[in-house]
Length: 112
Length: 112
Image (tube, rainbow over all chains, first blue to last red; front, side):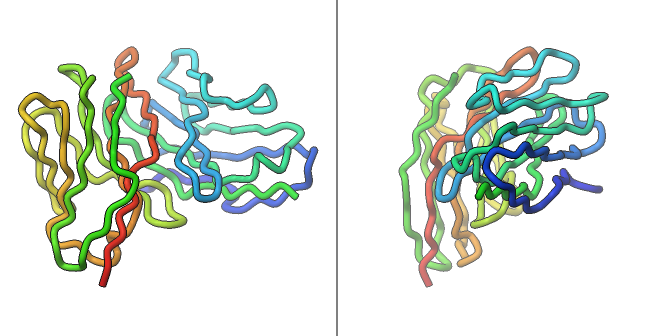
């Protein structure tokens, strides 16, 4: 079946602009995660949505970052007033309850 | 959180078994050990997971010590395509869902 998809695959934006990154999880998956990975670094947890519960936002680096998940399916990660240090690959993943997580291909964000 | 500790890097000759260790001494009785890997420029890929018994699938074997404080991922015949960063993870059970955070992992280099 279809895996996790993300769009766009690449995004170049000017410093100070806002960006929205989209994630379509695997149908029926109740948990959704956002991570980011800077060049040559490990995965940094950002946020995860768990069913109908309040999301765990403990990994969001600043209040410029926000995410929502509409209808328990599609999620959007928004970065306001982008900075150069926001340049990274943003990875989305989803899973069923207590099952393995499946990653999307990521969105490569470049802030110039 | 059940923290994991892995060596930063390892080398393995092509065709030989790659044995990747992981310590998780604070693991709880109902927490699983998961292994993922990330090949350059791709999203992480699930490999295997286990609770107490050894596990084997088409990709790898997982050996968990009797006290569950450590485990070893075994790639029986490493190929150049197995060069990747390998992550050992013990997800935190949170309200029936798993919060998955990634450490630095082990960078495995398979040498021709």
